[in-house]
Image (cartoon, rainbow, N blue to C red; front, side, top):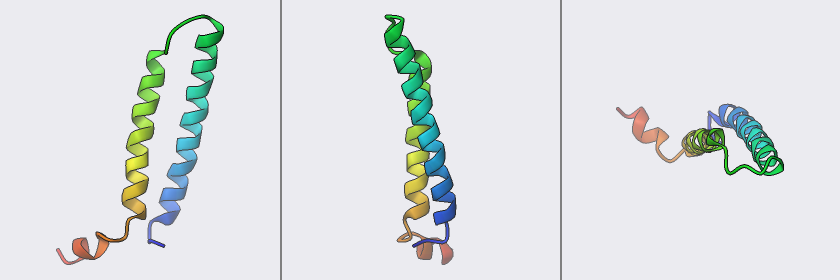
Length: 69
């Protein structure tokens, strides 16, 4: 467990919200016979960035190296 797990947990909730909005966009596009919406790509880029942040916050291996600086 790291000192930033609470932040990572909150970011995971944001990821869930992004997924929900993305699925809504895709469902609407399918219903209307359109292709993948441009906003879906943007949401997925944001999701990947947040996933990276979650990984960094949960990874305690690098914390002691940074503390020595």
